[in-house]
Amino acid sequence: MSLKEYLQSEYSKTSISGYENMINRFLLALGGKAEKASYTDVLDYIGLLREQNLHPKSLRNNLFAIKIQCRLVKELV
Image (spheres, rainbow, N blue to C red):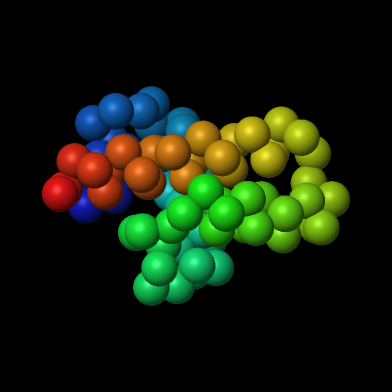
C-alpha cells in the first residue's frame, strides 16, 4: 500500500495533501534512515522545524504526520 492510498483510506480529502507534504519533508530530511527513525531522530527533526519558527500548532501537525508514517511502516511489516 502506498502512502497516498493509506492516507485516502484513513483521512479526509482536505487533509491528505497536507499530511503527504509533511511526511515527504520528513522522509527527505532523514533520508534512508526514516523507516527506522529513533525517538532522538524525530526530536532532532522537530528541533529543525522549531528553528524555522513554526507555530506550535504546525509543529504538532508535523509530529502527527510522522506518527502516520510510523503506522504505515508498521502495517507494511
